Image (cartoon, rainbow, N blue to C red; front, side, top):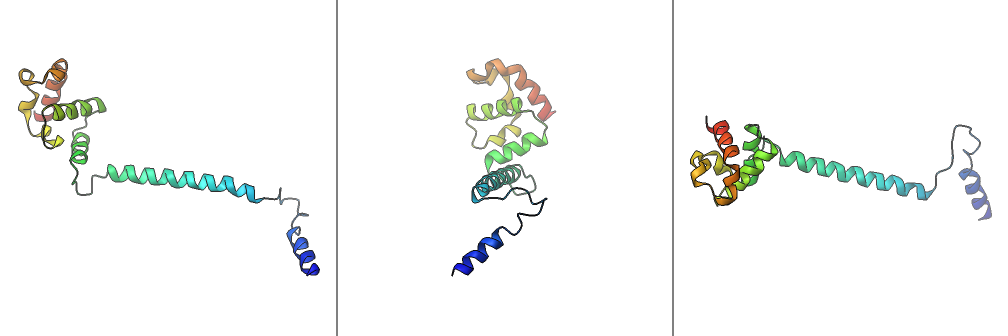
Length: 131
């Protein structure tokens, strides 16, 4: 038994005399590598989820995904997307993408009070989308 322990300690130190071997690694070093691996895995999962969320090649069965895709197709910026989403909510549309089908919803005279101060911006959006 003692010879086995002596042999294992000799084998454990066998590479200590190599000049390029560097410092010995301990089990605590694995913790840092484990944390780094978990962070990389989480980042990959988030990236895959974002890619799937914005993938326009898949069928669209979610109302807000269709809305985002239509906004991308029309080249709308974030401010315009938020304004159209607010218009859909204020008009109580069943599907937010319906704003892309209904040009009369952009008319300044029929706007809800919360959107009155955005009338000029909505008119520009109406022209961009329907003309």
